[in-house]
Image (cartoon, rainbow, N blue to C red; front, side, top):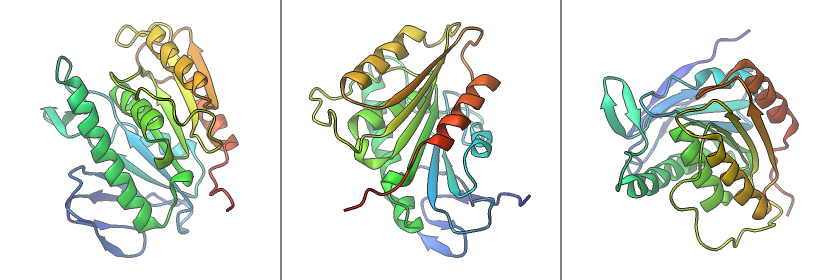
Length: 240
């Protein structure tokens, strides 16, 4: 089995699969880039968003639960809350502004990597946990054209999800996986249920899983469910 190559991405230059590629400085987010373990050029892209107080290394094991033709980028949140600890937003009155700013930074960085790897949005899978799940909901509901699917672990709706369901019943809405522990004391299951209800109302295709013995985390059963879902979705560019 080939070892995944871990590469640091910054505002300036990113070492990618077979060459050096220059990125513009407009996106401040840093992260880790993993080449496909197959050793071939990537066909799809997995983007990982960690939770509060963690960092870009936290969700890297999720890369082992998707196909070997994925390139993987794990982004680091922009707000420092401690040594090697970061957040996407601060709780309180400024949360909405932080979420909006983080969403724009994430979308900019995703678009840059999609261009450099020549991977379309419809072949991009976004996955986030906790605060990263909140941002995943925000992107899936407010910028559905930017991704092909999203896996949302222990999340909730952001403060704003747009007021007009203009994307309702569009055939190319992102496919969604949503998982949440029934014993989650940090983000209540009911909050994700609200998000799921809204997504269903807007016409999203989703797979929703509740885990009776799970708190605020990801367990083996959820990983198994995620792997099966990821293997079953088709992230292909629609024919014109």
